[in-house]
Length: 132
Ligand SMILES: [Ca+2]
Ligand SMILES: [Ca+2]
Image (cartoon, rainbow, N blue to C red; front, side, top):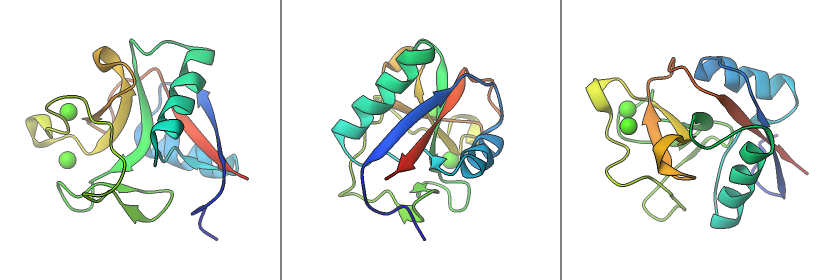
């Protein structure tokens, strides 16, 4: 069953792992690599990160365009991020810098905004969502 509805509790894990390892780790924990579908959820993800670390680093969330360049989806929801979806990209992002950025993160110099990064970037950690 897809975690398509319900209240999401977010937990950040301070582990420097590649994006797909983060994705699978969240599955093993019974959740999904964080999807963010509203400003309220974005705020809760930010709070989860601040509980264990700092937004001055990058934290993987569950958006990717690794399948089709430029078409991001929340992998844990099997749902595309469309024109009408909630989005919180940093200015100029996602930019697919170097032609090699397919995985979304929160943090770095952009506060709680999102950026696409290489899926193997060194990160501070990642955030899982657990749907009740
Ligand atoms: Ca990309
Ligand atoms: Ca980028």
